[in-house]
Length: 493
Image (cartoon, one colour):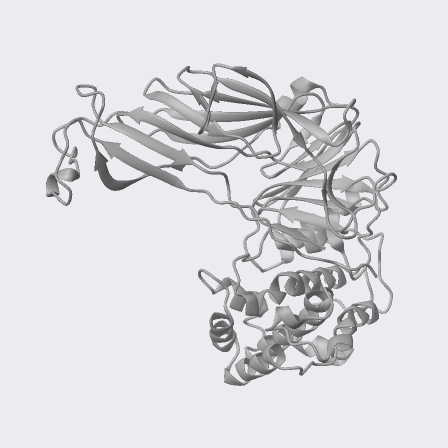
């Protein structure tokens, strides 16, 4: 049984706009805020396009090359960008180096630079570039800009220069085969690198993911997911899988789909979770992912109830751990093992108290904003009753730990859940939503992968209402905008 760790990677998405008028106004004056609602016609905004084209550097394993290109509308007069500290600039077009970064007044500036690719945990790699292939996070670079008229929107896209697949938050570079499966509003793009030897056939990996997308009731089943079967031959991974953001994840290719610790489903659950928690509910991220991975694999008849129960029983090893105090955990396995047992017990009690009309997912999905203990307890009481709430408080805030329930108790609480003595690993579970599948084999060319660029949603700057002097009177308001990256969270098993 592998150890599993969880780390968070945080960046910020922020847009700050300062409006400059052509005449100074006294500090605190009402005239400092310029009203254009009636006197000036609306101007259609343009779009600032930021494109990252990423490629391998086979002669220099451990780093990737990035060409970042901007396309600016005519209303944007200036743009300044800052690169990550570890970037090494190789070439610029239309940019000049300044104390604030790289500045451009042209309409299509670009920078070519290299980035270190390898990221590690205590046990091994989380992202890696071996020269012939790489699994890396999408690059990011903050930038500021000046414009006149209406605020421009911002679009960021990713492309692979060569062979590879670009997701919204994760990239695979190298030769691969691609299998796709669509079920309802979800699409899975399974990337099988040429260097990988998946333990489960790609069709079965897609089966377990598509069925989970159709059946899981936590979060929302929608979006386009890039799923990478990570090669294991010459790489020591520090985790069994890792999810970045709300879409993309990789899993070691040697991970099975017919195990209670189904990492494929575990990582997929992360894409549907609430990721903003207080420290007292941090355990719920990995705990609920482990629990739902085991429960859904049981429902798919890929494991026996005994295997499911053994998976939950791991939590009894940590009877003295208190989930609400992560700074006192003596093992990184606490949120996974005890967390999954407690999550399962709360789910079971909610189902019984509500006569099957509510579940743990009902409680989690009913919480808006940050997931705190008080918000969770309120949601549990609403979904179940006051007794379930009291039990949840005890299980989370004390050393108290439940014991895995019996097969008969499982039947009573989880009506409709398959409980079999022998798993049926070769069966294909029935999905209620229609599914379609396509296959792309061989080594896609740059032209093929060019259609795989992923775009982030359009972001629009907000005005702060602050004013300063304008150095260029007669040309309308001068506006400065700042774009600083995207909020992404790494979760790993």
